[in-house]
Length: 58
Image (tube, rainbow, N blue to C red; front, side, top):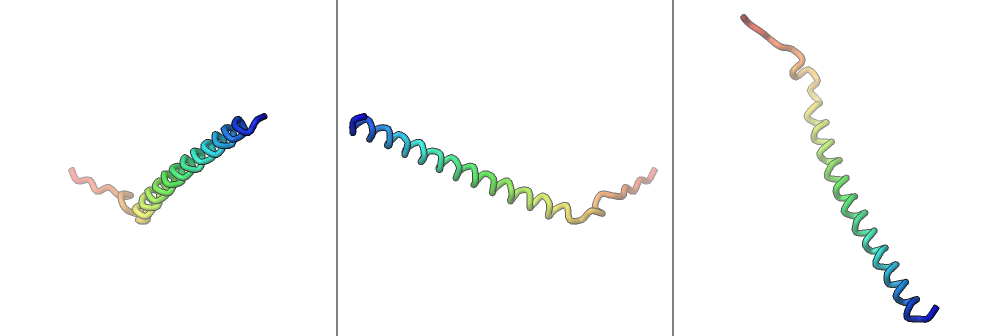
């Protein structure tokens, strides 16, 4: 293997690794956003008695 092809292979490997890191970072941001949404949803459900009774008059 000559120096040029070795350099190209290492460069492609580095590019692939950089792309993987960027994609994982974006996925982490997405998961954090989903987690924040889940926390807000759970905070709203703290009042379990809300909506448990229905008053009907005819």
